[in-house]
Image (cartoon, rainbow, N blue to C red; front, side, top):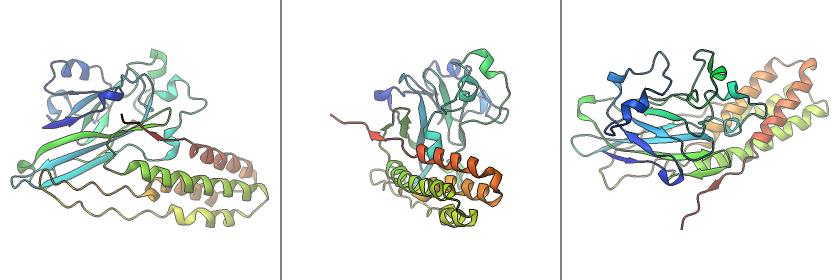
Length: 285
């Protein structure tokens, strides 16, 4: 198995073969539905944030190989919306328990999800509440012919830092997808706020954002290819990121009344600011 981390920017892996793996894993907060130590798949890794700054989102890519040498990719993108890429202006310690991935913290990355929180680096009073969410998700890498598949390679495909640095090979096309979503979200949010300020009807603003709120169709199933001839994963659709903003906007406008007009203006202004984050790629020598 081949593992590709981003240790050059402070995000190294510990694999299950590392003597420290079990000890470090015991320091990671695990919710009730997380795998037990005995159930942790051999393909799992622990990622350490040694970068010195928060990581706002990470994407992982697995490639599974069958007995005929055919590769089936699986992916997990942690960037669900542009708002996730900004630290809240009033973000106290308690609000930072799960996101972003703080310096000095660690996460357990498995084919079925990413587990952990920032309780290992936050003061005790910030982590008194129980499990209320977390940076997780993903899909199991083994589906058909489970006994015939093994992991060929796994990589940290991208990482987005608080200063806007975007690192990683980005075979999933996340950088381009987010750049497109940023431009459209800023336009829609700014136009919506401007319309509300001049007294536009809520239905007019609803029509502005309605199209962007349509759920995008699922991407086509990846076609397998032999090792050494792996086709890049299709770029992620930009409207998938835009959809999170637009769907929430539609819900707010559906139940809006004049008493909440000012709140709506503030929310759209905030969404426009969320789209202002300047992403920049890691410069190569």
